[in-house]
Image (cartoon, rainbow, N blue to C red):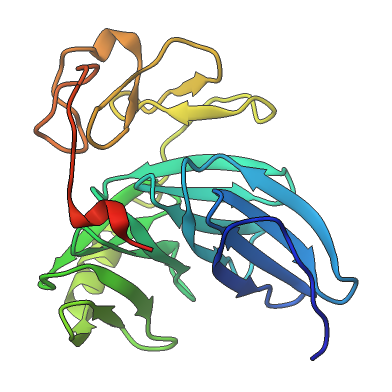
Length: 252
C-alpha cells in the first residue's frame, strides 16, 4: 500500500485520480467533496454545496475543472483553482450515480436513478441528449475512449452499448452552423450564485429565489407561478406538503 488517509464521513461514494498531479477527488455520503494529495497524505481543499450524498465525481483531463453529481438531483461543475462551483446542471429527476467528462468534446455524461442517461454540453450549460431504454436505476454510464459509443449498466440486469455516432454528427453540425455554443453571462466570480433556469442570469447567495418543488431548479421571483422549464409539469414556487414513502428512501 502506497499511502492511506482518512476523512470523517459515513461513507465514501466516489473517487477519481487527476491525470497529471498526485491528486485524488473523494466524494462523500456527507455531501462534501475533498481534494487530497496522495503523495503527501494531506487534504488540499474541500467543497460543500451538495445537499446529500455525492456519488459521481470526475476530473477534466485538461481544464482545472471537476464535475460532481449527487442525491440532490444536481450536477455541479467546479473550478478547483477558483475553489468554487461555476454552475449547476438541472434535469435529472432522481439520484445521480455517475458523472464523467468526454475525452474530446465539451460534454458530460450522467447516469441516474430516473432510468435515463443524459449528455450535457458544459460550455453552453444545457442537456443535448437523453438516452432512454433502461427500466431500472442506471448505476453507471461512460464514454468510449476513442469511438462514438456509450456503455451503461442498470439494476434491470442489463449492460447496454449505445451507438451515438448519428447524434454526435447532428450535434457537431449544429455547432458548426453557430460557431459559438456559449451563452454570455456577466457575473461576479467571487460571489457564489445559482443560475435562473429561465433567464440564465445569476442569482447570488442571499438574494430572493423561488424553486421548482420537483427538480429544485432556481428562478428569479418574477417567474413564480409559471411552468418549470426543466420538468415542464410543475409550478415554480409552489409549496408541496406531503409524505413520500418508496424504496428510493432506503437506497445506499
